[in-house]
Amino acid sequence: MEPATILIADDDAAIRTVLNQALGRLGHEVRVTGSVASLWQWVNDGEGDLVITDVLMPDGNGLDLIPQIKKRRPELRVIAMSAQNTLSTAVKANERGAFEYLPKPFDLNELLAIVQRGLDEPRSTGGKTEVARSEEEIPLIGRSAAMQTVYRAIARLTATELSVLISGESGTGKELVARALHDFSNRKGRPFVAINMAAIPRELIESELFGHEKGAFTGATTRYSGRFEQARGGTLFLDEIGDMPMDAQTRLLRVLQEGEYTTVGGRTPIKTDVRVISATHRDLKRQVAQGLFREDLFYRLNVVPIRLPPLRDRREDIPDLVSHFLSQSVELGLAQKTISTEAMQALQKYAWPGNVRELENLVRRLAALSIQDVISSQDVVTELAETELAEPAGAGANSEASLSDAVEQHLKRYFDSHDGELPAFGLYGRVLREIEKPLLALTLSATNGNQLKAADVLGLNRNTLRKKVRELEIAVVRTPKSP
Image 1 (cartoon, helix red, strand yellow):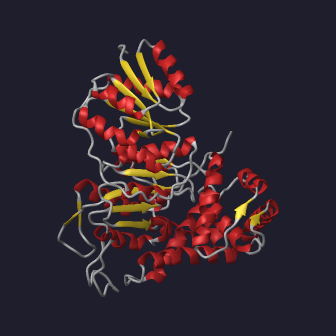
Image 2 (cartoon, one colour):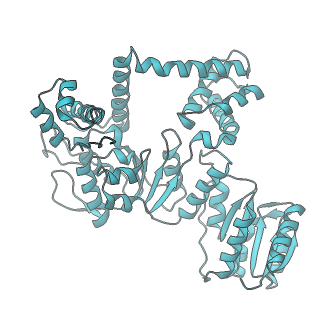
Image 3 (cartoon, helix red, strand yellow):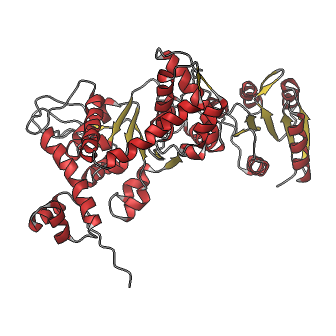
């Protein structure tokens, strides 16, 4: 790295000292200030090869200064830092032309690496065009290092049309990330359409995605516009993409490659104008290896991956999340509640298998059921105990009721997603076949691929089972026994 002059503006004297010493040891000339005005004076006078600035300072905002710097000296790169570790701050830094954004507290080695990139990479005088944004916060809560990585990824993607694959356990907030990518993009204000692959019977998926013409099949009494058409000009969010059957994967890949599709029963190609964002809680790489997901479609969707951390890996975010959910509860008409320190500690010790969604539901129950204004640790312990006791009940004597409840919720999501506009299909038979596939697949897995034994367990004729395995495209895998 060639020696350079680096301008640093931060109202924290300790940070100025650390950066001055670290960059000085690398041979750079460093000038430090705690004032936005002084920084602007240096830039205006033509000084400096790179700028590092805090956001909030006594006499101004470092983010507000970046557009002026880019206008006055387009080649000068600016690294922004902030203790306001929100998605909004990361996006604003990116939109206003920052070369990089770092949340505080920062890793010194990471900052030094960014400085080197800022000095070494070829420079462009084009600059970024700032887009006016609403100050309204996207409901992504958390200041942990794990969430900062997510925020920075979203910020870098605001001006792109790249496909994004969001992965993470159920309940981590994958749809919120998809909405943030949409709402901070150039497609904001246009449709954001979400479809859950796990909630749609396999025979209906192509019609759901691409629509169908009147008379295309029995029961198609009217034309139905699919989700690609509904999302025209905006964003299509394909949730639980790992549950998409292979034939629908093939059709989706063709659409993404060719940029056009036809409705079921239609002949005229329709040009697509959507940004596709997908999400899954499954390990798609493993599914590709098992032949359950198309490799070429995986790479088409996974242009930019974003991994959402489970709540147990960012427990420091729980207080902010609880505060947010308690405020939401007041908006829903519940009484204002606070939470004791001991209760918060109990929440932070819990494993949260249902992640943020489980925390949200628990906080709302506590806000509704707690008699006192302050939620106690006993309130939390009681509710968590009841939650844990409910788990084995669904897997034991009441297993049939549990399966029925799961199917009911699955169908409810399907009906709710249509908001009253239900396509006409033979839904009854198709739903039965959707239940049939995992039943057969899991039984075959439990019998190590032994179809004769599986047929006995299921009470089916062996030839019938083989026929269904072919029809449902079930992969039969036998694991060799250890010697």
